Length: 124
Image 1 (cartoon, rainbow, N blue to C red):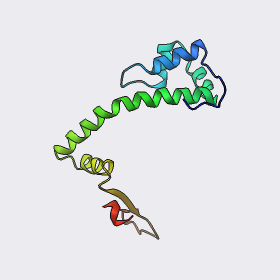
Image 2: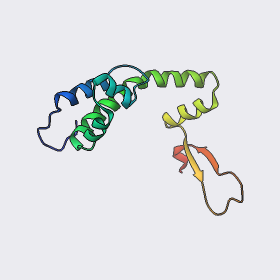
Image 3: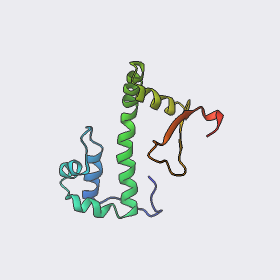
């Protein structure tokens, strides 16, 4: 965990909140996590102002999200294989095959902004 260099340790209540944030489930809003830990939401937001607690929270919260990535990517690839154009574009971007380039400039006079996909080696 990236902390401020002190020997910071979470309090018992903070530890309960951090543990609750690691629980499985897709509907894990901060309100749900706070309720599970028995910590008022306002208290959690106050703790997040402390850089050490915020770093610990981010490690736990984003670590939980990262654990779901393999399944999410597999589902995205499945959608792409079934012909979902948005999924195909996103898979190509994630694979580094294409990247988005938005051309913006001047008065568009009601014309849509052009978004095009280019191979990264062709330049952006």
